[in-house]
Length: 615
Image 1 (cartoon, rainbow, N blue to C red):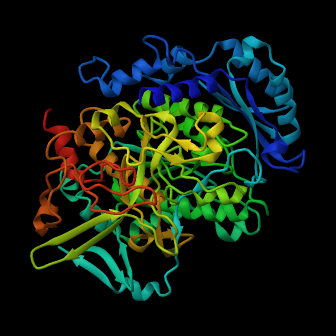
Image 2: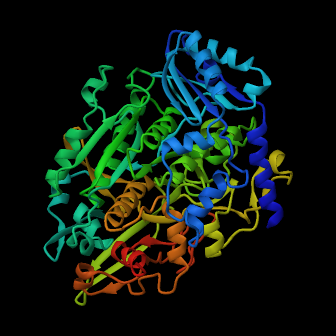
Image 3: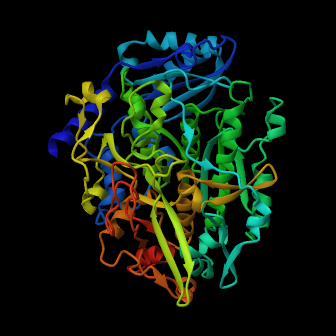
């Protein structure tokens, strides 16, 4: 195991010290016009990350050393910038390269500089950066052109995809007439072979109601949602005009399902989206994603504020939007329901520099006590995403879910049955079926080490060797990858199966059925926000706390059949165990962490009890 950990450490060190990586506009989108709107994004190395008492040391003390005076004591953005930013002369050079090319600065952060203009000006700035002296170049990880309104995933620059699955119901009116009520609450809709979960049913089944009775519903907590495009007005989008209607849809959703009015703020950290013939389909798809994210974060934390940060397209502006929320301390938690296969960055030509750059954003979030959640993906361990590039289908976890400073959220199928004695609750991994291909994503990172929390929990490596032909040049083992010592995905899970999915309000209409790990991530973020509202300290990154509780005795709810009043008064045990299932390469082991559903599913009141029992 030590050998494999060393290998990953070396890989990241090489990525950090390698020559800067540059994507000009034509490599991002072949054939993009020179006058197309575009962003310049320059990723910079942080300072003092691995030095004694540096950033890695700080993070370990904050999350993994309960006896440290730094445990759950977090720093400010100003402190982060002062302690870990590159030297000022590096920023001066990058900003001068941008402005002298005719670009306008839109964001300067501890590890990234972003500017806007057209593709010709971006390429001009990139040329200047490529000629930087060694004392500048050593700080540059990557410089990128991100065309706006023109971005399509046919270049080598990263494109991120929402992780939701949508199936229209043939008769929504008939479905709504088949609601199951428990204790006066509308729990779910039984329609054909679907079990459609209603917002109050999710609150009930994940044991939030006892917390709500204490007034702990996310009040005083802010949840950030980062998506491309936002929730666009479909009619105007088809006329290539941009209008976000997320506030309108969220208000209708809240009224329709008896939720309190939502507090919603919409921000555009990298500018407003532009709708064009090239990205219209993406914009409409991301609208479903956005509606799902904000509506179900609100459902699980109805007292929390929601901050929607909209990126203008599906490129690296998404990470700039995350950094905007972090550097301005606008939120306590962030949910990301998108990603791309990790081996996208490693297959020839390899570009692990980008993973190193993004990782810095999440280290800053963790250091400031901001917990980030990310969906583990909907394609299991075998990512059909690779088919778009004509490369072999290989098992790969999704990034950013695989980042060690992110809590990865996998997917389940959530069932409940009313019996004479109470409620029978059954949750298993979201499995393969013929229509949706593989379900919940999971597995082991190629790049990142096993986290200290996972070491503490003694996670299981179910497959010692995985066939990975595209990575053989990087790892030196012909066609094989050895997972031991690598970061396991996911950490936790929640409902994601479209057959046990939810309804969303979009463009003023109630639609369904929608699922995917895009549902699971905002569900867990909302549950955590509600728990946070009752704690005297900040949780920050949830994963270390998950593994600490998981390692304790009686972490799980042991029964699947429980009396009704137990759900109304609070269940003991922090997690519901996943009862079975698989995602292609891996299988759930009951009562143990697995690379399918992590430690299981949150039992909100039981988890709150675990965190407050020693106060």
